[in-house]
Amino acid sequence: MSNLDTPENAMWRAKARKVADEVLRPLAKKYDELQEYPWEIRDALAEAGLMGAWISPDYGGKAGDTPVLDLCIIVEEIAKADPAIGVLFAVNALGSFPIIVGGTEEQKKRFLPPIARGEKLCAFCLSEKTAGSDAQGLKVRAIAKGEDTWTIHGEKKWTTNGGAADFYTVFAVTDPTSRSRRISAFIVEKDMPGFSIGKVEDKMGIRAVPVVETVFDGVEVRKSHLLGGRAGHGFKHAMATLDRARPGVAAQGMGCAQGALDLATVYSQKRIQFGKPISSFQMVQQMLANMATKTEAARQLVYSCARKIDAGLPNTTKVAAMAKLFATDVAMEVTTDAVQIFGGYGFMRDYPIEKFMRDAKITQIYEGTNQVQRIVVARGILKEADALSHLEEFVPSEEQMIYEED
Ligand SMILES: Cc1cc2nc3c(=O)[nH]c(=O)nc-3n(C[C@H](O)[C@H](O)[C@H](O)COP(=O)(O)OP(=O)(O)OC[C@H]3O[C@@H](n4cnc5c(N)ncnc54)[C@H](O)[C@@H]3O)c2cc1C
Picture 1 (cartoon, rainbow, N blue to C red):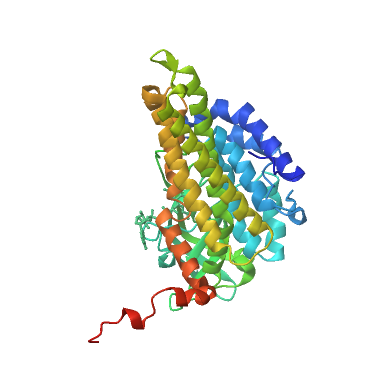
Picture 2: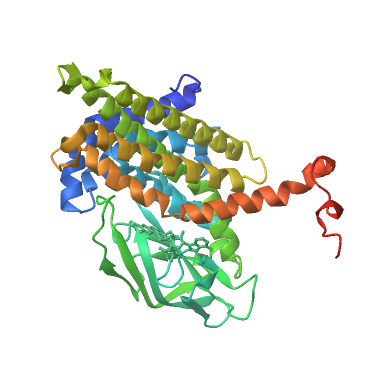
């Protein structure tokens, strides 16, 4: 259901759908099996002009009035055909958002245009072996060497796009004594001495995109590569990045759900049991109806969240977390039900449906697990509770809830 698309939204949707149907869907199985970066797909996405969709024309991109919504629409259309390519595409937005939200003018002019042209890929290095949900607990250190040079030491875990990417936004501790200004962000280029790729992960899903350990063995970076040119602002940049990127993961989940629902709908009309298509059985219809309703609800939450961010509304952290948790939980539920509708065939690697279920799982985990999203949402609700003080007289008062003898 995309009839509310603006002409700009519709243009991005049509471009993404074309490349998804013509290139991605036919190649999905190949790269799931190979577990290698699909350069031919990167080329097709770049040729279709999709890579610069979220980057301002000031920096070589093609962003219009609604860059976050357009990004979500592109990721949705891609994920409908191959959810793994949804993240392969969106991770470039994740890796470049720190530069967009926190970079100096010089950094934006230098790093964004080649990303927008699809010539350079990027990655986001926040997580470490011992710092996942607890992103404040980073151990990778960047040690100052004089006024404007740092050396980065340590390892990052689960860097999506690692090895394929040219630019890595790396979050490292610059001031271990500070609580609020502990972390800084740096842009590391792949050929900088001391940077290397460690373990390459063997994954359950999203196998077309590499996820690796990244190693920083005294990588020397100058101030030109310190994000925003100021130390101590890394955590703020990481959180601002996640607020903008989470709708993209939500779109990946929602597109994944829609892709699985479409396949299940087609199959349910072809599969005959008891002399009838299984789509004529009410229990199958109930599954299809629930899957479609949840997917549409996810879509509307993703779009409304993206529109709020594009409109520059404040405090979009809560709605970005809501969209991420809801759409990705829907992805897991809907893809699991789609496999159920396929019966035994759904369990086989011969057909793409089982891959949708494998690809869905990670969306509940990365960019903050869905437990962490619920913490963010609850924190947001409680922060806004002052606005509800006029309702206090309609709930039991503190006095009414005290024991007489107290
Ligand atoms: C395939 C893949 C790709 C990834 N890509 C990237 C990337 O490109 N860049 C990057 O920086 N990171 C990336 N990550 C890391 C990802 O963001 C983390 O895995 C995620 O944030 C969870 O951290 P963790 O795995 O350490 O789990 P943990 O934090 O150890 O959590 C384990 C469990 O405990 C729960 N839990 C933890 N804390 C709480 C709490 N306070 N309350 C309730 N429950 C809690 C979690 O929800 C989870 O269920 C990727 C991970 C994977 C698997």
